Length: 246
Image 1 (cartoon, rainbow, N blue to C red):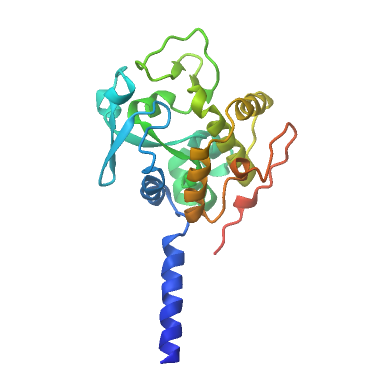
Image 2 (cartoon, rainbow, N blue to C red):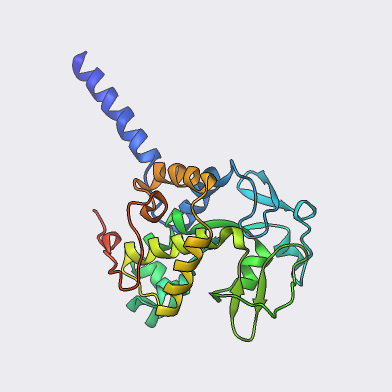
């Protein structure tokens, strides 16, 4: 009986551990991301209220004054956006040079971990996700608003996307995290921009709470949110996420 009790307890611990395991691929990550972000129930860039139906998120465009720019079907759904685009972290991998994202998903376990990293995923209105594409973040003072009251701007010629002020610090700390964990390069201009955004938009209570919920699945926090690490020019990424445990 003692053996059965021990085995049963071990099984419960094992199941609990598996339930909280970090996602192994993007499909798993999207399902977990919904659980993590659902308490806020607003889209990342535009702050539109989200209604969840199963695995689908439906934004209330009227709640944030969003106006469809071009793609109505994508504007009517929530998509999971990589804050640091897959192109940014993917093109620094050899698999990308040999066949792009599809090849990386098939052949590179590290890429799959990066693609599934929950700290880099946010719920975004599909059309905004599409308009952002893999454009770099920046400031566009002369660009007009193109999505109603949603405070984003896009310069399609320069391939630059300006996010709202209230999420710029969140974006910066996500970039710091991804660069540090996976030993990714950031240009000097990017570092300076994100360091400024980190100061101008400090960590909020909501961001701390999201960090804690995400930690339950990832097994670690974003140290640039918790304050355990601080980015500076010349910071040397640790690359601690490049080891795949078997």
